[in-house]
Length: 265
Image (cartoon, rainbow, N blue to C red; front, top):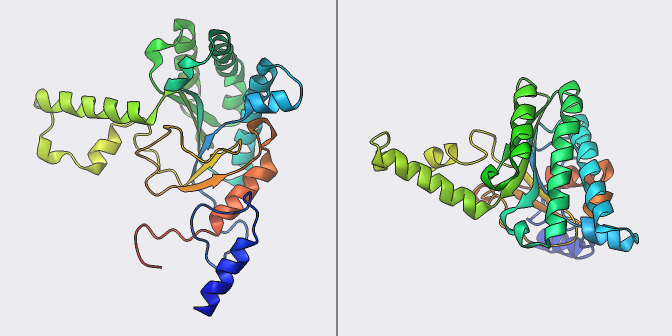
């Protein structure tokens, strides 16, 4: 009991930036002992970063897009195999029209211009979400980039565009219902594994770590099904400022977590 009280006392001295979302063991392993295989990032804070630096909202979003390239390289350096980022949510359509157009332009530019770099670095690109509402040229560019990088395996980069966790669950339920109605699938055969196979992340490894930048403490309708046993890390750093050192800190924090999956520690 005394040892536990000591741990609690020591944790109370930790700043909010360093405080983990779940309980940390007292004797944590050193850095590098446990690298997450699959990392999710909610890239938040572009507009606030721009405002703090007396820049336009466009400059903030552009800096955020550029930072995705740097963090992708950092993931390669750290040995992270899967990176999934939240680029545009189903709720983002409610933003002012000029901002939505700007975000579409940045997505178009990133996918079109960075495909060559992705190929050279062995990065496989995959885009998830409802593409039907996106401009046709963006849909075409996404498909072309996915084809050109399909053989890459150093890092699997998944970009969620016009995506929402609730949408993902509803679309999966619809897909399974259609299979049942057509006789392709029996209701009795539907289990968690079957459900997961029809979701956007499909057969990718379950996410190990969710990082949210920008100082907010919520998941904002991102990967609701997939977050069941995901560790969470929240940082005050705005997305354009989140660099390799910040990512390394998040990975180090993850390495100290005790992942029990419902079992007693």
